[in-house]
Image 1: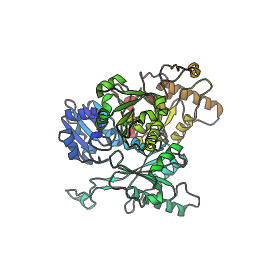
Image 2: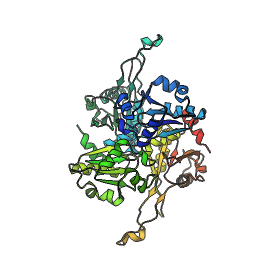
Image 3: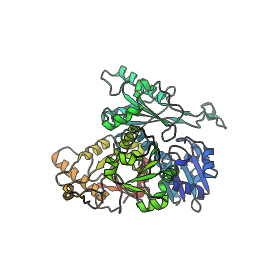
Image 4: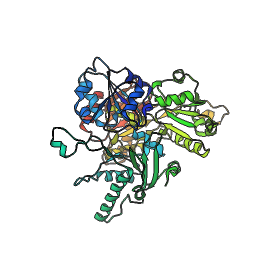
Length: 273
Length: 273
C-alpha cells in the first residue's frame, strides 16, 4: 500500500492519530521537503515518530516515482507531506503513477493553509481563486496574479496569496556543472509580497487613466506560521504592510474583498496595527 | 483555556495527536453536532477518547456561550468540531465571546471538506467561491447559488457545492409549543442537488433567450463520505448525476470549470461513469 499522509501546518503533534499509526508501521517513509516546510525540523519529526525518515527533494518527488513506489505492492510505503496531500500537483501525479503500477493507495487528510487561514476571521466561503506570488527576477516580473486578485475583488471575494518558497534551487552557474550547487533557501515575506503588489499598482496607474480597484490604501492581512504556537496575524493597509516584519517563515497574505461581514470586521479588529 | 479542536472528516482516528492530548486533559469536552456530522457516532468517539462528551446542539452553541465557557479562565474546556474549527461562523463568534470574557483560546486545525475535496483530482487553487445548496421548501426556492456557480464557471473556476444538512430542526407544529419536537435528520444527496440545479437551468432557459453557461450536459463530480474508508466519487453529466446513488451522508457536489488541466482530466477518468 502507498500512503500519502498530510502533516498539517504546525509541529510534530499535528499529524493525525491514523497518520501516526501508518508512519510507525511502514517499511520506508519519505518526507517531502520542498513544496512547503513544517515549522519543526526533520530531526524533531524522527524523534517523535521513533524512526528514520528519507528526505525527498524536488528531483526525487517529481522524477523518482519508481524509486518511491518500489515494493509498495507488497509492503507499506508512505510519503509525508506538509499540509494536505492534494495541495500540490506533484502528489496527484504520484497517485496516478501508483495506480498505473497496480499499487493501492490511501490518503490521510490534514489541515492545509487553504482552510487554516480561517483563523484570521475571514469567512472561508468568501474566498475566490487562490493566487501564488512568485519572486521576481531580472527580466521576469510576472504580474498576472494581480489581475486575479482584482477579479476576486470585483466579485466581492477575498484572495489568499501563497508566497514563493525557494528550497534547493540550483545556482545558475552550477546548472551546467556535474555537481549542482544550491542557493540558500528563501521564503517570501508579507512585506516583500506587499512591495511587489504596490509596484504593480503604481505601474498600472501610469498605464491606465481609469481608477484601480485595489490601491495602496486597501486592507491587507498578513499571516505568519499559521497553526504554530507563535502564529502572528496583522491587518493594515497594503502600504503599511510593506513595513511589517512578521519574523520567520512561512508567510501568507490576504487581500480581503471590498465589503466585510460585521463578524469578519469585528474579528479582524484584534489584528489591526 | 478554551480549545476549539477540529476532528477532520472521517473517523475517531482523524483527530490530531495534539488534539487528542487536549481532549484527554480537559475538564469538560463539548461535541458540536449540527453544522456537520462525523461518519462515526458519539459513542465511538467516547470509547476512543476514554471519556464522556457533552453533545452541543444548535441552541447551546449559538446561545449558550456562557454555559460552554463557564470556568474556562481557570480550567480547560474544549469544543470539538467536525472538519476545521473555522468552517462555520458560529465558532468564530464563540472565540470572540471567549476573548470578551478574558479567556485565552487555542485552535487545533484539521482537514475540512474545503481542502479534502482535492481527492477528486481537481486543483484546489482553481476553485472559486464555495456555495451552499439549501433544501427547497414550499414557497421558498432560492436559486442565487446558481448565479455564483455560473459566475465561477465564466471565470474558468470550479465550484464546490456544500449540500444542506437538517439536524434537530423543530417541526413547524411544535414551534409554538412548550416542548419542541424534531424532524428526522436529513442530508441532501448529490442526486437531490443535481435535481434542483436542473430545475433552475430549465426555468432560466424559459426566461432568457440567450444560451446558458451551465447545461444538463455539464460535467459534475459527486463525492460521498470524503476522508472515510468507504469514500465514493463519481464524475458524469449533471443530468446523469440526478440518477446517481452514493449512499449515506455526507455528500458534496462539484461543478468543474469549463477547461480542465490535463492532469485533472487524467485523474477524473478514474471516476467516470
